[in-house]
Image 1 (cartoon, rainbow, N blue to C red):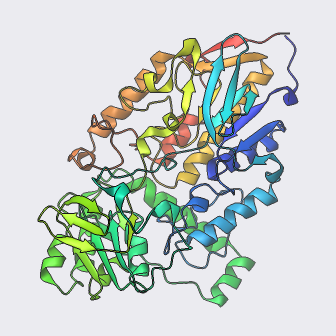
Image 2 (image 1 turned 90 degrees about the horizontal axis):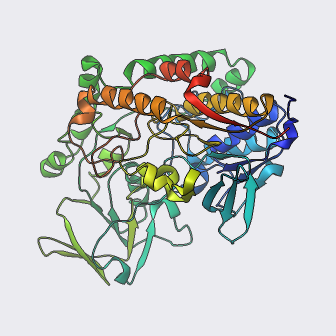
Length: 488
């Protein structure tokens, strides 16, 4: 059987965020040039291009939240800000020749596999189509906004927007602002908007663990030293990764106790004893995603920030009414309600072999072999897919990309039309993952967070170390996959 030429394989990557760019870079490394990065927004960078709210930054130290092939030694502080991370992502896209492959404002709404043609047809938002032998989904977890189901939300007469669609044209100075939600984005932007707003009412459903962090900006002398010799940053990167590998599953009782104590000490900064107790989490550390901020708790000592824990009954044209009947008049409502993280690729219409949809395949929650392939969907690979969330996602993405590259090289080397994971290894793998998740006490406390589907199945978290994920994805067992030979 003759080897198919490399340029005879058309590859479509959905999303030009960190995953899509890493995938494109590695394809170019291996000589695959016929690929397109389809991006629904107006720029590369993924979540860092979309989320631009005040105070937005990463909760993984930037020494590790960067690609191994493009180490940045001069982050201005240990935890990178959104503008700095976006600048880094744009730099990666330009340096590694990805921009000619990017098509902006080209969101994918449907992907359909043809058994007869052994290829995918992608339908874009404008109705046009693209054919590809291989599709890589790089849309990840945080691509589909979550909107609260609150009576009267559409009737609000003021300004309303989601934190992931921040309205920078709207000036909050002197306004009365309602923030609905108190998780990842809120803990970062609430201390910032409080500085301009006349009053901020923060509506909290559940108190979260918000940990302090060591985040002192580097001095100019330190940055210049790091540029000359990045060894300290590389050592710091290894230390972070080692620490994460040891603590990813929240089973170290001593570390958990220390984390909880640090948060309680931070909460004790709040002067009002009633507010203080409302801010104390009632679930164990790690049950939901732990958050980070040095400014969140101190902000509650300011007179123009109110914590509201009464449930919202409805929205009126002029404000927010809680179940006790109190109406708070506001000019602007900001929804800090996150994303529908458990949807993954089902955020678009995906139709695989024999006309089966991804929604049918995932009727009990998203699942995939190694978080990368799902049975019945040939030549479809996922980055940041089901049960791959933990540690530094950029590190996890690099492992996933290397795994996908091996599949793509095999398609060419063996002249295969398609490769599809068999149901049995996928089911065994997911049973093992769910068994491991069941053995992690804090993840089974019963918290309502983005980890879980409505049925209670955790489909986001990886219950082992990043090293374990690397070891599992570093090789391909051909017996785990069904293949079809190509023509020639």
